Length: 508
Ligand code: UDP
Image (cartoon, rainbow, N blue to C red; front, side, top):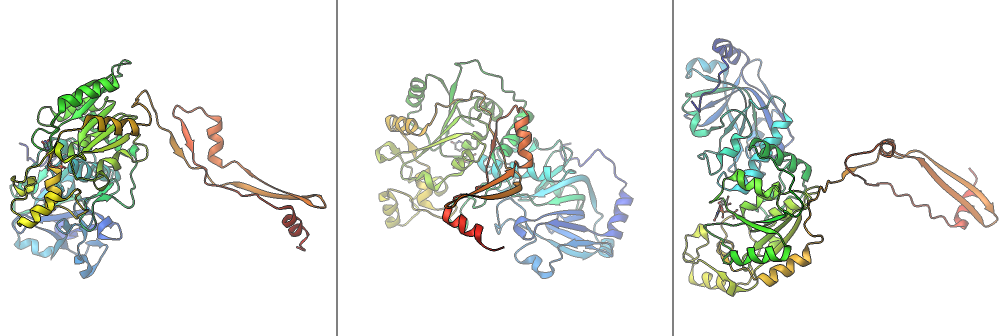
């Protein structure tokens, strides 16, 4: 009974009475539709009309009460992607008295989180847009605990990694298509609608070309805590590896964007770094076994692509080597660089690009979504074939971009080794590298200025202050983690004797 709603019995008549008398209640956080998450009592959903319904009664609450602005453009974003016009949430309104004429409601007793997944067939999107935001939205509201129910309203099927969504709570997540099995009118006793965007670091290029978000609010610490939660739920334990048992993981793709000389690449990496090399692919291993391997690897090498999101499972100090096909500029596609560069992620990141067209195999005859271009005008095809770099572009169907990114690549080993040697500041080393937590000092206390005249042409100004309150504890205690103190206070005490003398002689 995967779609059974709950083993907890609820008093149906009490719930119906509460809905009829109190109606729906909504209280939200956030000033704008782009940063809003709403909490509801008795939010209902009509499965035939595919609309959420707010029932008005004397006791209903709707905060914010936006009036018609609720539709300009929406109450909130239902996915974590900012202001995407296919991801808006809103509800229709009815007086609670209308319930008398409506199908009998089915109540969902669980505390529910209602959201849209953005792209459940792509591992990068699954982690960045869904799993991380769901995990941290659940941390924000304590009643969204392990018993919470997730409801995905984007309307897709399970997608390619539904098991990953199952890790977030003990209850089976519901898809939009499941809802109609329960009845015509469903009422969520307690629900939250929308997702926190606090943990996302990348924007996909809907209004400006893709790139890291302008105001990143997440650090490696939160990513790593989420990653260890996922590993925990996947029953992955990382054992301490004996010295000298370091290894490199090459993450390959089996169906497109291939590395054509993978064997040669593996052999050279093993020789250069005196380490074992292993290949993994989503086609050949389970996700859990891949994460297990990556979680103790010294280096992860892969073509650009969604599989690189697994670099969040690398140990601190490891290196990420991202390979780009011919005519694709690594600086223009940086979700994995941005991830590796988050403060506290402690990963070394290096990009390599194929600059030799002869080492590239393109597929102009494939369907457009796999990079084919034969559906385009002849002139346009010729322009694309002659171009040496894909110009910056918006998401998501730029044919030149798709054509280039779906090329296979023969990796030029000497040029790769050169880039990696140049880029790796230290040999990838995981040995217990614990990060410093950054401590910001409190304000300077009891500042004092003392002046004294030393001689006719010499004055002294001395400035002293008490150590900021939190820093004195750093001195006294031993910490098991190194602590880095960021000094905000810079005092300039350059005083020329002449100036000092003059100010000293100024009348009060
Ligand atoms: N994928 C894969 N093997 C392949 C090609 C794709 O496992 O040979 C996976 C990939 O990791 C992603 C999904 O299929 O999760 C969609 O891949 P796509 O090429 O559309 O996206 P990209 O990897 O460029 O983000």
